[in-house]
Amino acid sequence: GQNIDQPTEMTATEGAIVQINCTYQTSGFNGLFWYQQHAGEAPTFLSYNVLDGLEEKGRFSSFLSRSKGYSYLLLKELQMKDSASYLCAVRDSNYQLIWGAGTKLIIKP
Amino acid sequence: ETGVTQTPRHLVMGMTNKKSLKCEQHLGHNAMYWYKQSAKKPLELMFVYSLEERVENNSVPSRFSPECPNSSHLFLHLHTLQPEDSALYLCASSQDVGAGANVLTFGAGSRLTVL
Image 1 (tube, rainbow over the protein chains, first blue to last red):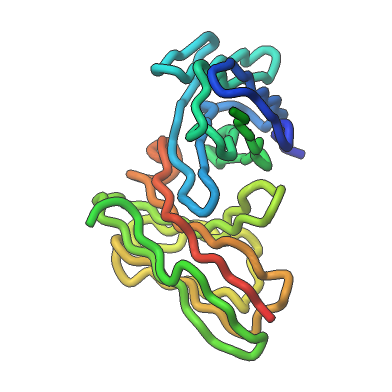
Image 2: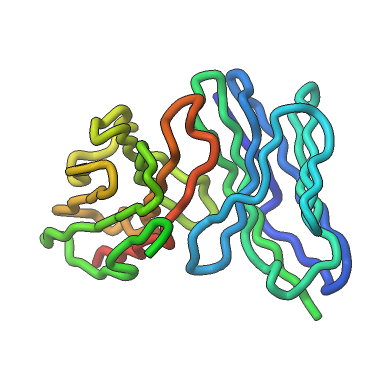
């Protein structure tokens, strides 16, 4: 079967750096997405990786290794507003999105 | 108004009630989706519409009935639901389906509680 694994919950300190990992086993691969979802709000698109390597976008970066079935989302200079759930999703060979259960990130002062 | 709008934001219903969830997108997208989001579980895709035609129905019970009258509006009609149907129902849209469905734009969801 197809599966996405990510930690259920993580805690980090304001101003620090946190890395949220995502591993996947899917039937084929056509890209990996990260979404951010604040409590009670819509998930919003953060990043898309289809080739190996690091994509940087401001304080957020996303890394992909297709051979290892692995991605991470790196958040730098954490702010309280970064407290949210982070959803990893992979598009398989049929262009179906397979979702992880999300990682709840708690930022402490 | 821009983006994807869902109403109502909160809904409480008994198992014998009939209600509907509404979704509207102002992005000119061709594809619309219904997802179910339960606590600590992955998003579950329920239905996909492309240009008002249903292209996917993921073994969803018949007590959920979708309707897409045009490419901007999507409804989810609910009847004789079960308590386990309590969840957040998310609507999303994308430019197209398949290879053209790069980024999904989600609504804020309708929080459904079935008593």
